Length: 270
Image (cartoon, rainbow, N blue to C red):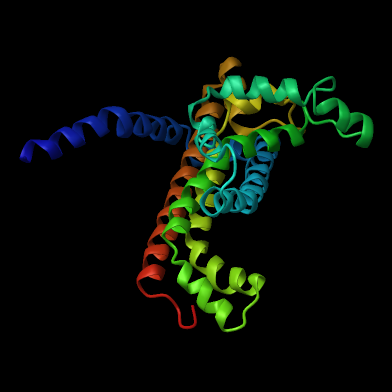
């Protein structure tokens, strides 16, 4: 089977390493001074704050509700549970442009949810930063649910029953017995969802006004720079996103390693 590793390296070189290497070389060609200037323009910095900040907000929201959904799917029996379980993966299969179109229609000023929110609370969702955050929540939700679900299924109910027998309340059992064991999976799911939300383009561009310093995200800025034939800026900003993706990958792998070590050697008292 010595040929398998050769095929692996060849395939990854053609599909992954060469495109990324070309991007890195193109970005390095502008020089360090110009690279810094293009990467830190006021417009670019504004998109970083919006993309990274809203992605973090979406990841934290999914970190809470994703655990609740996973708990319901694993521990509860209710009508339509299997259908709901299959629909969790819909953001993976649904074209992002279709998702953005649906969200923009629902949350527009005359949409099913957008109109009541505007009339009752004066809250406009579509074509604002709030719409961008909702789109990021939509596309990153499955990561937390699918990360927590198998760990929750593997938990032994005997531990919870033992805690109850020792006088622990349901809240204490959840906080001191269940959540500590779920935390590595929750953190990994949140990190994966965060990385996915930062790089999202198709659904966000449909529900955002794409106005600089308002709700313009970094991937949309790259497209705008390409349309303006400003290839140097597009390449530099793309390289910044690539570096962030590599950093996110390191964090995710670190969380997974920590989770495996935690499961092998849990702390005393858990």
